[in-house]
Amino acid sequence: MEHVNRQMTTEITVMSLLTKSATLLVSALLLAGLCSCSVLPDKYLFPSVPSQNVVDQDGRIFFQKFTEDFLVDDLIGVHQLGNRQQKLKAMTGEVANALQTLIGNRLAGHHHNVQLADNQLWDLTVNDLDRQDNKTVIIGGRIRRLSIQASTITALVATEYDFLVEIDCYVGRVEEKKVFKRTVRYSHKMISFLYSQKEMERLLDKFLSETAVQVVENIESFL
Image (cartoon, rainbow, N blue to C red; front, side):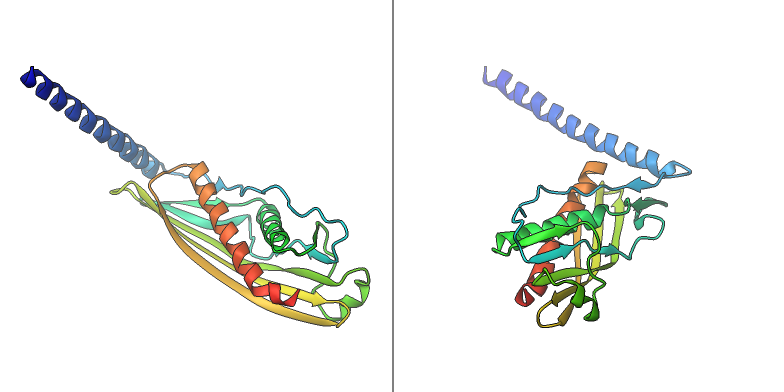
């Protein structure tokens, strides 16, 4: 009986190793197939926009959506896949929408009464504060750069990501007629052993959430 049990254990171990080997082989063949394609189509990434926690309609802090100065032909990065490249793109407004909600939610979580504005209320200058008579503070800014550099290492079936963002944040204190500017530059490297659209978007969401933390830390003292 002991001999039979030992034989069954050996067979199960061998089958488990074969299954793992087959999974790695399929992944490697998939990547090899992608790398051998003559043309890799552009990939559009769609960041998630969380539910808004900003519900206070009496808030005197207004936060207008950042402008997206980084977008040229929707391009935000490149995925190096073997000896081929794939352009990574985002639709106009997608990144700004996500960041505005992420930052607004974080400010609300810090007990700031914030209202999010879709339209551009302020041109970011001191002179334009004269038109903001119904506000105490107004926040705006520009996303100057967003870059995603991804590289798939086929030997390890892993993808390395290098995220970078630069944002000029402006806080206007209306009654004092003062404008404060803070430039937030944040980068983060990540690695994933999954290759899919969903995984790439999950990492982008994570990066944008971390960026929101950096923005709030830089501007909160001026609110």
